[in-house]
Amino acid sequence: MTPREQEEYRALRATIRERGTARIWIFVSGLAAWAAATLATAGLSAPPVATLVPLLVLAAAFEGVLALHVGVERIGRYLQVFFEGDAETARWEHAAMAFGTPKGAAGLDALFSIPFLLAAIFNVLPALIVEPTSAELIFIGGAHALFLLRLGVARDVAKKQRAIDLERFRELQRSTQSAQRSQS
Image (cartoon, rainbow, N blue to C red):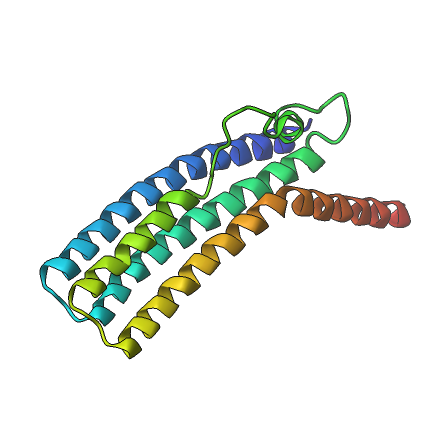
C-alpha cells in the first residue's frame, strides 16, 4: 500500500467511526427535541395541525440518521472493493459483510426504526386531546402515515444497500482497470 493509500484508508476508517458516533447523537438529541416539541404542543392545547411541528423534528432526526448510515455503509463497501480486493487483503469489511446476522443472534436496527415508529404514534396523541375535525384528522393522519411509509421504505432499502453498493463499486473498479489497460 502506498503512503497515499494508507492515509486514505485511515481517513475513511476514521470517518466511519465518527459518523457512527454522530448517528447515535443525532438520534438521541433528535428524540429529545421531538419530545420537547410534543410536550409543548400537548401542554399548550395547540390546534391539531400543530402536531406537524414535532413530526417535522422527528423526520429531520430520522433523515440525519439515515444519511449517516448510508454514508458509512457506502464507505465500507468502497474499502471492501478498493482496499480489500483479494483474499490476501480481505479484513474487516469482508468479515462484517460475511458475518451478517447469524440465526439466534440479536438483530441491530442501525436506523432506530422502532423508536421512530413509536414516537410517530405518540406524536398523534396531542392532536386527539383537542378533538380534531374529520378533515384535521385525515390531514394529520396522512402526514404521519407518510412518515411511517418513509420509515418502512428506508428500512427495506437499507437492507439491500450493502449488496447494491458492493456491486456498483466493483463495476467502477472494473471500468477503471479497463481504462488503465487501454491507456497502456
